[in-house]
Length: 133
Image (cartoon, rainbow, N blue to C red; front, side):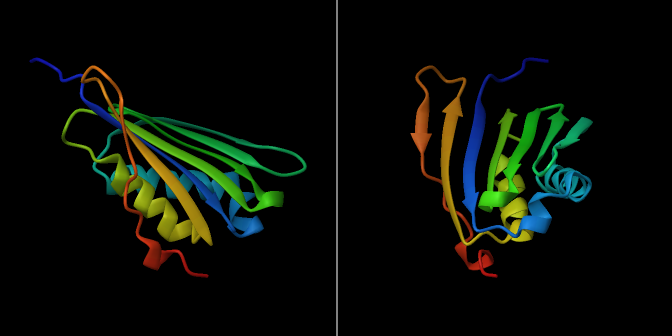
């Protein structure tokens, strides 16, 4: 079987997210696994860290690559990213899922198309209707 080097890497900065959501590594971990499954990815393992006095990091290792979040609850900020290799898993679906549960006031995203030579940068369309509190 020949594997494709084609991949998509979506990175999103979200602002205006509820402190309690961003400060709960256990809840974030459950949501991240749901997001990975929503995009059709295969979860290999999950690591999470709850920081003191606040903040969390969750890394979901996927067979297709990874999904991660780093939070700064005191600023209402979360940095999300999802990278998947191949054509079958769309990282945008995982990002859309996370935006739907985090409900940020604003979000800024870029998508890198990787593995095809020169990196291509695109601005993905986020489901803004879901970003209401």
